[in-house]
Length: 150
Image (tube, rainbow, N blue to C red):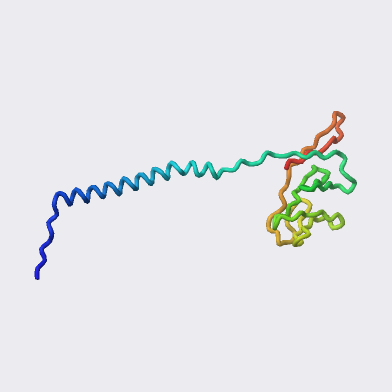
């Protein structure tokens, strides 16, 4: 038995061409929609960073050489005062300065840090964030206060 090939007509060719053009138009519309939506979706995910906060500490610092606040510890170094965050980089517990050992320790999981915030003992992997400290002086040159930027 011999099967005869079907003959394609002009109408069949037009239908194929039309469906091809229809698919191309749909894909182009989808690509155009995505290219227009991308900037909008990117804008919606944008977060504005918080404005910096300033905390003023009156001079002089205690004889111990440090001042602890809720959010930071300020150290009086002979070269330049510095401050580190009190939020542990492991799980966010509030760290404390152990004056007798001269280290900063997390009470939750015993991560230990130097006064400058460098990790001495884990489980914390990252150092404590350093905070900017500005020293303001009186007209006679004595230190008036310290301004810590949070």
